[in-house]
Image (cartoon, rainbow, N blue to C red; front, side, top):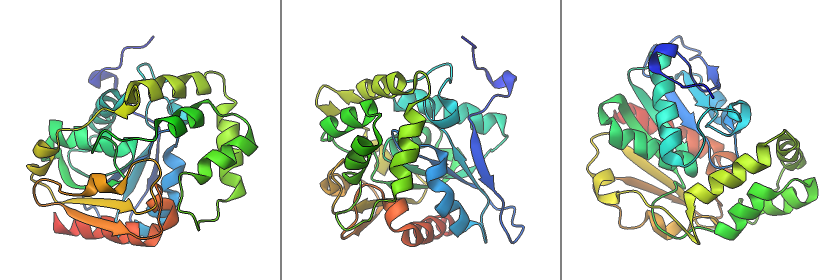
Length: 265
């Protein structure tokens, strides 16, 4: 097993899009949720590319980082992202995280707030104990495309038409050696029995950067009420008829809010 160090200049796999206007402004870094990968951000990267450079990472145990040396809960992923930012010499970034990636982004901001210009969290993990642990465990273990389609439908709003390619691609990714076992192991680290481990919300409210939280009223993974009564000055955006995947369901709105938050920094 390889020991990852800053001197090794290693970083997580990522997709990068440059700003079309040639801007050298602080870049946007995007972190996906549990069971996803960097490809889920392609539409958001395209939407913000007129003015912003962006990088979307694969978190440890996901995508091309399936065999990352250390895999586990959000804290482990946060360290891997921090190492990657150092390796890529990104001294300051706008950080965006979805679900588990939201918990990862929050931990990075808590650890090194001066590095984070703005923080945008989509249905973030860790904002309360409630979590649909049965769905996540079944999703982690699924390999059959038909079963995957039925499970993935639970992640979206009731009116969203799930692309057939999404379930097929997810099932194909699970066919890789070790993929299912890795996801099941990560699930057990982020779920504590039937609840999830929580973030220090009071300390989150004391962070200095602009923070936006985005949630859908039809989220069946993490309840929308976890966005209520947040500490500090946090802009909360609740969307009707949207599920747990706002960046895929309402990408234009999410991209606009990411840019808006970056402009406030």
